[in-house]
View (spheres, one colour):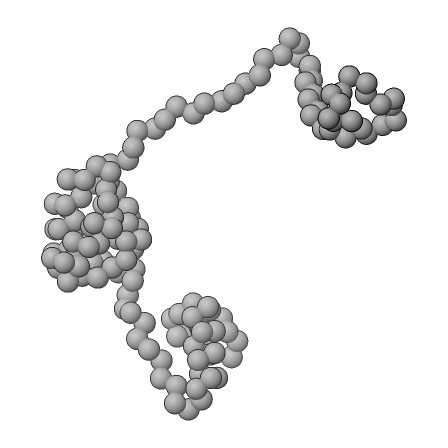
Amino acid sequence: MDAETAADQLGIGRSQLYRMKTAWLASGDTYRPKASGGDHCGLWPAKIHTFLEGFLPVQNPPNFQLVADELERLCGFVRARSSVEAYVKLYFPHLVALPPRKQRVYRRFRRAAIGELWQHDSSIHQWWPAPPQTDAPAHCR
């Protein structure tokens, strides 16, 4: 069976499949897979949604680490800050205050005529044969 078929039948990604294979090869017959941690993409419980709907509008901008800490402290619901941020942005985008858009600054150089080219070479190297510079300071010669 190829890796893609095995990963599909187990319901895991290919990288997780290779991690499991490495662990199995290292331990042999004593290998027991660990729990996956559950469904990370499913909906969170209703009491968590109620908490988020009440807690998120209070913050501007939102502090997702604080939200994760409060979820753990008040509800016993442990999630990483990045997971809380991703979930909130997916399911509660209307509660996340976005900073106002800033006007982008574009530096545009004006030219006297169409097709005019400006060239600036600040190289210190002498690229073609020429007489040595005589106006250079004494400490540079």
